Image (cartoon, rainbow, N blue to C red; front, side, top):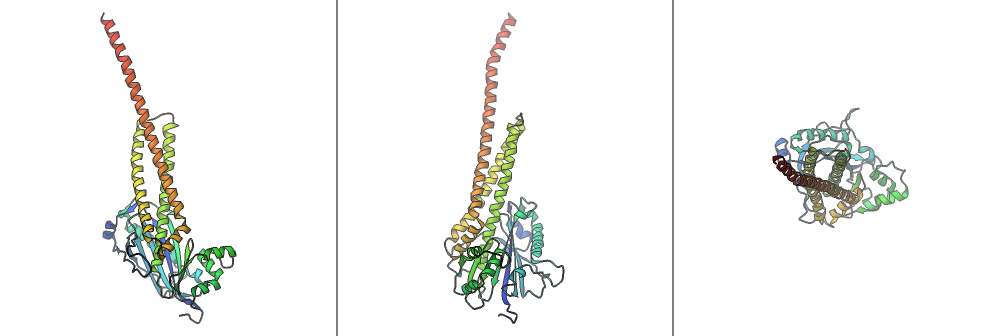
Length: 378
């Protein structure tokens, strides 16, 4: 209930998605940490009964150090996916006015000056989880900022006035600024209208609006776990596609170096040809990994379909521009395959030409040697 300061109960959810390697052995994970299979959500909306999403292992993260009196409740968990992704989710409930919500996203975990923020707590928790799972990660790598996606959900557990749409209409500038991460009063009216244009409501007393890094949910019944799962899965899809694109970009640069070494160095070595055959085999393995990842991601979006959650998922994919990322991955994958196939074909042709020249030389030189031998005998 709203208190005397005009604060209402809210829940803020921080989602961090990381790509840590090519894949993760979930069976080995289960032997390393006390993780369990994710519990399926109860189907409460018009969601197909056959809805299936990637099934990660879930690891609870201790929040004992998060003892700020401003938290009425706090929890944290890590989800470990077979495709090489780990998500860290931190959720906490507090009291806030609508205007103070942006600041509440950066709360400190303790009531002590200099203590860690929620983001720092999530980052340190992720690093501990990743280190614990190091031996289960295939293609373990050092991470950069591009290997992480962040998303924040602001969930209002009470709606002043009772009508979510009317509340949004009365606080358009503040709502759009909150969702976009901008300072209140700086957005043009056209941007405000664009941000708030596509909202989703399932019941008369709820509403959800999404943007690139944040979303706003108003639901007094707190029945939004499945909506948050769509946001998590869309971020998971984005980080996987982006990582594939980055990996393929590196391989295309490697292909350029191979071409320069083979054709512009002035000499062609047999060792280079052996390396080319090895590279082609590696490309085939990468191609299969990429195709399987794309297929798994596409299957999830097909199964969700046009239902309510599907509409939210497709809206998030539209915001994240995942179709363009997918197109880029497929285009680079085909280009890479074509480059090495052409190199392989050219190398084979060069080898055949060399054999033909040797054969011709033998056919000419051997008879001449025989003639010379006969003449010498005489």
